[in-house]
Image 1 (cartoon, helix red, strand yellow):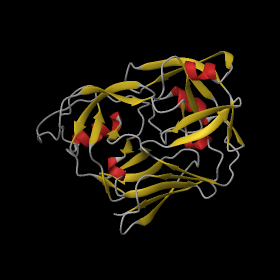
Image 2 (cartoon, rainbow, N blue to C red):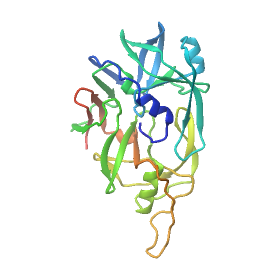
Image 3 (cartoon, rainbow, N blue to C red):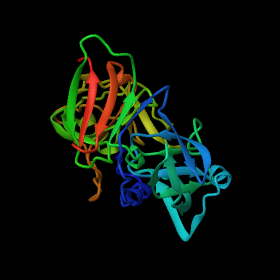
Image 4 (cartoon, one colour):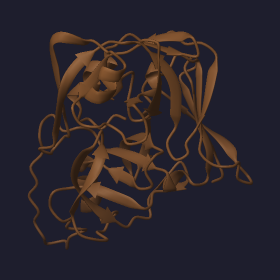
Length: 288
């Protein structure tokens, strides 16, 4: 998930990629869970497709697994455009997946990072050539949608949405799709995401929460409808304005690109998502 918001994820991207071997298939019921060992102890990890090559553990799980934290190494996780922060320590545990070793930097946080497992891991930290996430039974008329990846460990693809270049990530554990702030501003100005409810605080990742507004949209990506959807924003969306209206918007110089995180409902016509590290290709198996 490249949300353009996590200093933590930037650090994790610098971790050496795991040695890839063979293939693994995980079922998203409702989230993909992988079994592993840390320090000889069994652990269940939620695979979050928005993560790169990283691991997040709660402090309680780290103590149980005897994960040693690196001295004087602290991290802060923050959401772009929000005051929400999560602070913790850095560790680098040795992880085994079916006997295959993988090493990834880990963030150890005092707060729970997931309610489904002992921790959260990115697909880039799994030591397999081919990683497949099964979403639904094979729909009639399904075909492969093959998409290139710039980085085999980062499940981010680029495509045109509403006439603009977007980065697209995937969140198979949550129903709704989410536009980041840059995308929300741009699509609000063109009238492509009219508001469908009030702005409210909602969970985003690792237990962090941020302000979002439900929106209606007829936009689609890869032939898949983007709904239900939320726009990340602190203030209510304005919608398309009249020709003589004047709207002043401030833009930060380091603002992230437009990003859409596709949720589970947008992928309801898809049987699976698969990434082949060797060819740096993602394949969506969908009926569109």
